[in-house]
Structure formats: C-alpha cells, structure tokens
Length: 335
Ligand SMILES: Cc1cc2nc3c(=O)[nH]c(=O)nc-3n(C[C@H](O)[C@H](O)[C@H](O)COP(=O)(O)O)c2cc1C
Image 1: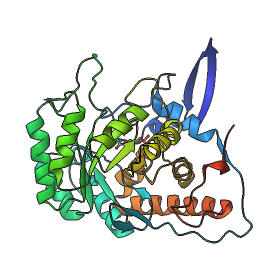
Image 2: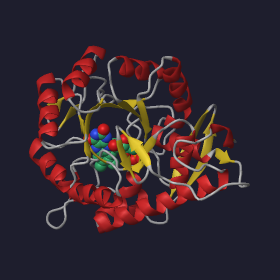
Image 3: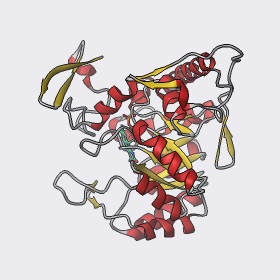
C-alpha cells in the first residue's frame, strides 16, 4: 500500500491510495465501517501522513536495550502497545474462532491490556471470560440508564476499567448517530462525573481531541483519556500526535495526573514511539491488527504486536530511551 498526492486544488490536496489489488483497499469486513475515502477531509489519512512527517534524531552513546514494561492504573503490563476497542467482529464470522475473543486471548498471552467497544452484555461476558483484564468502552447512548447498567455489568464480569467513546455522538445526517437501532446522545461533563463516581473502576473518556475536553474529563474525575478521532469519524480532524503535547502540558499545568493514551494509525512500533514521545503513556493498535486477526486469529495478533514491540524497542535503543517513562520529545522533528 502506498500513499501518493494525486493533485492539488488551491489549498486543498487530494490524496489517494495506490493499491496492488483492489481487495487490499480495506482489510475489514466490507461495509461495516467507513473505508478510507482518500479525500482531504479524512482524518485517518491526514493522521497517517502527519505521523510519517515526524523524523527521529539518533542518540546512541550510552544507550542500552530498553524495557517496555508499562504500569497503568496500578497494574504492570509487558508493553505500552495495547489492543483496540473493536466491536461487532463476531458478526463477520459464521463459524470458527470468534475474533473478539481471539484478540482478547492474544492480549492475555502477550501480557498487555485488552479493550472492547460496543458489544451487548452477553457478548461482553464471553470476552471477559477469555480475558478479564479488559476495558469496556460503552457508547454514548441517549439512554443514560443503559450506560449505567453496562458499567455495572462490566464490573460484575471483573473488567479492569470502563469508559465511554464520547466522540461517537454525531451521525452523517448532522444529528445524533444511531448504532444497531440504539440512539446516541450528548455527553455532558456532569454525566462523565456521575459515571466516573459510580464505576468503582478506572473510568476512561475515549475520543478526546482537544485541550478543552481533556481538562473537562480530568475535572469530571476520569482516570484516563484516549486521544483519538476513532479512525477518522470527525471530518478534517487533527492528528492525535498534533494535539498530544498541548494536552500533556495543560494537564500538567492543572496538576492532573490523569493517564493519557492515544490511538489512530498506530500501524507500527515506530508510530507508537512517536505518540509516546509526544505525551502518550500507552497506545492502542487499531486496524493494523485487523487483517492478522481476521486471517489467523490470536496467533496473527500476537505476531503483529510482537513485531510492533520490536520496532518500538529498536527506536528506543537508537535514541537512548531506557524505559517507557523516559521518552523525550526533543528527539522528534516535523519535516
Ligand atoms: C471494526 C472496528 C470496530 C470499532 N468499534 C469501536 C467501538 O465500538 N468503540 C470505540 O470506541 N471504537 C471503536 N473502533 C475504533 C477503534 O477503537 C480505534 O479508535 C480506531 O480503530 C483507531 O484508528 P486506526 O484504526 O486508524 O488505528 C472500532 C474500530 C474498528 C476497526
């Protein structure tokens, strides 16, 4: 897969993917989620291009093989590269291994953290059985009772943390989105405050892409945020890498130690390195694990994450970063 600029029209550039084969355009189940459009308003495409513009200087004298161990909410994980909050993938297979449980098992055997997105309670229970060290990300349902009951259910299944993908409010018609016939609704700061207080687990706001929302999430008592545009839901959305440094600074100035995670276009360990150097404590892989997951299940995901861990370690070794709490943004240069 190769990115290229096809033409420039005034200030707006149009990008396209050049593919060897048409079916390589998107590795996931057809029609389930937005395919990369190739258009200038596509935040996923912009994010890919932005990450690729960041170059890394070398600091090898005195550098030693790094440790990837990462502590989040009091638990130590083997690596800061964690699983994505995927959903609906079990619907893509008729029989055979169920993808949602397959990547949950991969997280468990790798010793990293699992995330899961919109799944009904009975599906979530199966995933939590495969790996209870799972974060359940619940949709911003208009019905707050449903959010509260899904939080309670996650806790009863032994979930590690819960959250809401606060960015999934808007639909393409300019109103609130409707997912699987369930209407979404607005998310108020007070709602977050209530969820964080009742959760009895770390509560995470996923889909923060501004200092303003990061500060509100911290004020509301969230234990963490995921800086993300949800593989490009918002048209013309910024790259998480652009906004991360400002968010880190604003939180530090406000005296907040809320955990900052990031995702979107984490396609390699090098992408993970850049996001961590810019202020993320951990990152979630996304569609980068989708193809190996759907092709080879747990084994495929494990191989992909191991490869990404090796790439992260390689770049840390080249830049004299001994562990995941010692990243330094001054090695990065936007070119
Ligand atoms: C099949 C699929 C299902 C997803 N479902 C959810 C979901 O239910 N909740 C959520 O917060 N994010 C969901 N996401 C978004 C991911 O958690 C993540 O934010 C995104 O994939 C990161 O961008 P990337 O794929 O470019 O790395 C989903 C992504 C995919 C590919």
